[in-house]
Length: 415
Image (tube, rainbow, N blue to C red; front, top):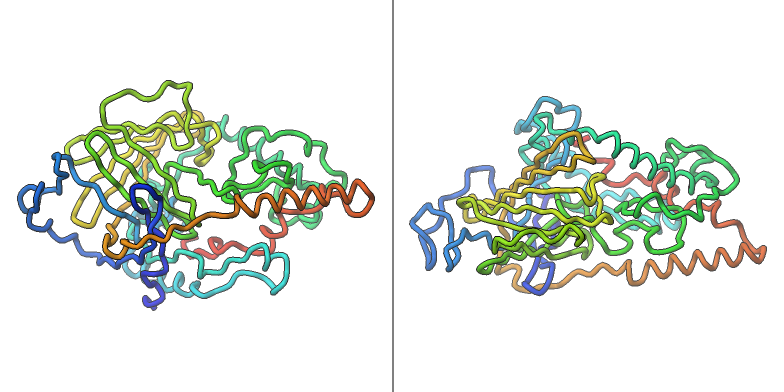
């Protein structure tokens, strides 16, 4: 059964100092404690001491990934259980292994077959981790409740998306994509409105194509950004490169949607509040052997679980062994959640030798797919204006795929 979980299934890692990815198989690790640090080399301390850079800082460098799969939030069935038993992990591995090679697409040649286009050969299927959730605080392993302000904002976003679907088959047939909405054969006048706020749904699309922003981030080769906890497609890798006074991290996830962040270590303050960035502004310092990074100044166009420009992160990166790296991040936004919450991950170092050849993945949807989508909608609008076709506003460009083809994640035995 465990042979279904082969290293090469996760093939993307983060790359050289001028790139964001490396192609590499992952290595297996045992559940035993990490081995002692190797004998000291140049720039290192005594046996058993943390590795150091030539200029004396803790060495976090390398290509790292989480080789095990852990749900972000604790599933309800494990409510009071922080760790899986070995029997539970084996059973979950068996169930997850059975998914490998499955094809959730519908009848060949159907809209779902063409539009979905993914089977599990594209997915990352890993062994089950020890924890029942990445969230370790609160103790229930769940993300805290949203504030009333955040709930109202999310409701306004959802109301707008449903309005654009109201005249389509998705609402007429009461499909899941229209849950909470009502069918009305008359297209909504809201088609002419901008969204209540910048549309950032990663896999959520508006039922129109007036511009690139109506499509999801993935269609535009963008990523939500920090914090980054992995991806169904392609896993999640980061390469850490250190210099005196600064650290660069090169992330790679999804399908070529890599990106880079720079962490300033010179003691300078954050950027002025008027300067906002997609990945925020990272300022770090050392507390013993732990790199502590304070991240602020996020753009209102970013979106993490409903949090945008007020998102504040405090990260802790600690080298715990030659091939292990502990990551902890505390996430807060008083406008989004009722209290702060904390996530932990354990990363394993990947082989520099196996990653010496770099085949950079590239996301091309933003270059080729989006122009085609936009042009196609303009052609349909012209045909309707000339009396040669249906009103594009009555066509469902979102719900048909969402409603009839369950995503592989929906089959996850964690749930």
